[in-house]
Image 1 (cartoon, rainbow, N blue to C red):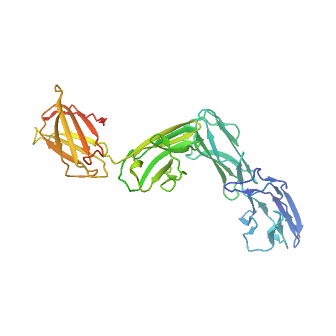
Image 2: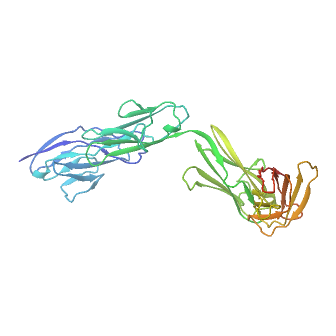
Length: 408
């Protein structure tokens, strides 16, 4: 009996990325093989530049589709089928009638060049090219991860799309999909990222400390290309390799919890008094630089969230509420006030009964319209103090306006 093992063709199974410089190329052409029943059939599959890609064989007839080989691994319990180690030819020994079928490969797609990330200058141009192989020939479709291609997309061919004058709206992940009805679709993803100058933020700009503790100073940044990060102390770059510093300081970098951007932390162990000061996190790439400064100090922080109010039950009193950060307990506050038409401030002492970053509320009979200063100190020998100005604070149920400024 003459068997006709009809139409074979070869496709590469898709892999995430190949390390080869050239893409695979089929040398064998699709064709037809006729053999006598019981004889040996060989279906050639010669490939150049295979690299780290793999080849997959399928048997397809009217009723079913069967995976025969994935790479060199036989996926059916039939040792009559074999793929030899020196090539990708499919051998069928002792052929039988039901072996007559179409032997195919699923679709595969690959990018040209073999590149999955494009970083583009604002206003630049980028072209994405994708080819597919398969039998039947796969149809190619480009989509964006959110499912909508930008209006600026140039459809040069089915395989090629391009963008001119790239802006933020063209950035994102694009997918090339190839489908021919054999197995599932194959796809390859490519990402377009807009180059940008660094942006730097500091979650905490003021860190109250004391000697001997460990402190973490953190900033976050976004930039393309990846920037160089430099830490600066009181205007001088920190040399983390110097003998004086390398055992006391280190830098740890990680992704932010949101996954957007990077976080870099300068860790200082066994803090010394000479370590108190301003630390600047600077990010620089070829497009520019950005920085943020964080103060590490034994001083109390600037009083924050300052509020003034008058209770209806005590209309002759003004209540002042604020929050302050300090490693040490606050020992004294000074409140100074004057009327608009006065030149000299009146002062009163306010001894706190709550400490460390907690709201402190005081009620004082201060029937005035004028300027009020708040001074906080942690000790009496100059660890530090901060002033805040409260302007136009009107008692007796009138409207008040708060203007906060800082003065040493």
